[in-house]
Image (cartoon, rainbow, N blue to C red):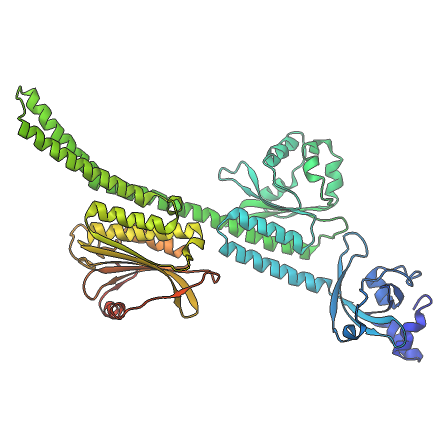
Length: 548
């Protein structure tokens, strides 16, 4: 042991020479620390681990805090502490301290756990990123969280996640840590490129493999070709630059840029972590693209459905109005004067047709209007749907909402929109195909064992599955074609399902069941004896979940 404290550590181990040799050659750090948190003495392993000057150990600052209560500290077990012997050289020590008898000094035994803790944090970061990809519906939110996680885990100066737009000619900063986002970033980047600057991230994107450039900060800040980005990239201070492509199905969809702090080493393990996080980012981008394509298909199919509905109702009624008006024109063209009775008859027919057209159009507007845009939100939107349907069809349509604590209003707006669309489609199918006289809709946040679900039921007293309307799809009031497909896709988007059943007493029930976050309180679902009997009979009769 060098310095005046050599005998201190040796004495704690024993007075003989062999004990001193054990201390000197111990793989773990052994040190004596005073009540100011400064080294008194340290063995060679401790000197190496803490980056100390072997000739100036005594009085040097130590990583180990002074305990407030020596009695409690002696029983505290193994602790951890972070240490930075030089800028960018962060280490973590696991240590145990014991008080030396008769003086305010501590014997500290410690070991380097930097890599082990870093691996733990990286695995945690990868798991969090995977969870974020699976749960978040916002691509920007996912990539922003991922960038923050990468920067925090490896203590990086900055991280950027950029995605390629659909035409492949622009990159957009979708997530950032350390550096803020700027709408001018890409344009300034292209200006740098036009000046002759070498864009390493575009090379990584083109080559589809990582690129690592040491001392890139000094190169960039001293190069006038990078002047348009100097102000944006100047702070925080960084050194090595790494760029990792985001690959989805083998195709580049973006770039993850990592800016390492001065003194940080970029080795295989650092690259492996960046590649793992880039893979999660690529999955998020790919998932968002698939979701957008799915939404495009749904929007296209809903437009087709609207076109069919317009043709079946409004177009035919307007055509009838046109023919009635033309009959008067024909009479006048032949030199015949329509009698007052004939004019009154045509006027009544036109008025009736116009009222029917207006009712149909109002019903379609209600069905198409987003639930979130209705004053008061989701429940008023459903009540408007029910009231409008009842008014224009003459059917007895009712709505029961079991939501005493107003939990529904706290749910995700997109989820409520999908629930609204499913209920609207089920009501529409009952009106169009079931030949029903009564339609009842009910919503409840229901407890099913340990799980909580939003349950929506639409029940009619019509012809049941497969009967009645010869033009209706198999499944009676539950469309087995486009409508049913869209309903199930909306439910599946939230991990839910749509079930269609034949009622024991006739008619059809459509049930939407969607699991809810654990933070949403639940009220027990009300199951009446009639409901139970109907479910039992339906189980033995007809249960159409995918075949109807």
